Image (cartoon, rainbow, N blue to C red):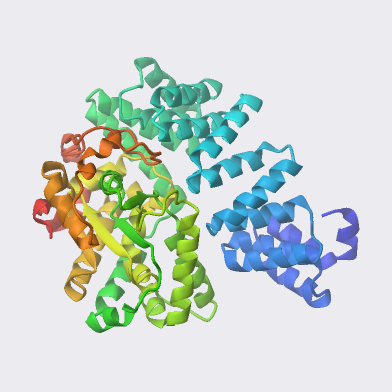
Length: 533
């Protein structure tokens, strides 16, 4: 804001200072006071939208920023904030168009970086890779552009080229934790003894946990590969502790939501979800905890000629978050209560919104498509409310393997339960309680697959899954490793190989340190999951 604006609009100047000081609620009050005096004044609308964005009120932020632009705010910051808000709401088509325009107007490489991220989320991997290649060519000194380029290469199966990109990032900045984790997350052993020395040196001088935490995970993976399990667990623990302290995850919130689902969702509730669907495409949701074999199952089912795999779509959580934001303006509301209150017309509109967004990822007209976002397990009832013809397949990995695999993965905040053994154990227990309850009140809603059985007898498991979907058997599903597609998950190399038992019993070398996990899991830790279903 320039000096003229400050002198002309003192309330707006106060609002900006408060926003910069992190006093967002007070900043919003000042901006609204300014707008009461100067209705529809574009700079006031823009600032109020920016404050709303920082508060996480994304729907309101979009409303104010759009209005600011309509009233004449054409500055770069307002349009960048709107593009960012659209991206955070997973309105990717509009966000990509805006960032494309901003990139043409400005030489700031941040716009190209954001466009690459959005195109990648949209499944336009070749376009994202091209942008990222341009960025490393024009800004070769920036390690995070090399890391992003490495991610694109790896997703396309160009593992050696991805390793070279990650190594370039580490050479530029040996403290860059995400570069080291990029190398460590490759399934084959690529970290050398010299790398271990460099990673330890990086940890010794690191100040920012955004560097130190992923470096601890990478160092742990290097020690794991050398069967030095005590050292590996030491670094897994530190990396997770640093992430947990920075996030402040509250496991009780999920437990409370599952408790309410069990109290309030009965057969009558399920019956109210059922209605006719006019949609032609059938979405298939593969749900699970992360690291449960969902990518493998997607690759298998996606090899069927009637099914198109489209990856992990962020749209169900985004649509639910938007409707929750609107509902909570009138007071506190829980997810089960919200679902019960959604009128049919609104539910249909949200279903059409999901399908419209999913269409951005589709390349065929096959009658079924697969969305495999793991955390959609807790959104099962919302999915059935807005998409009555959806099919849901739950794949479950044995709890000790699944939970330890989460603990040993340097996840983003999207998987915040993974950063403490107690939290991931509680999450697994809540997930099982949720699915068991749905099995009692709606036995046909979800089809269950045990990861162990899928590995041991894939044909039997896949025949049952295809029967649930109403599809005929096709042997192509057993040739899944031949499917030529981009895979953007940590399992990208594994699903390009025939079936193997590499993911089984990975926790056992660490058994002596996993008592907090066992305590949370209780009887689940001993349950024979191959009998699931």
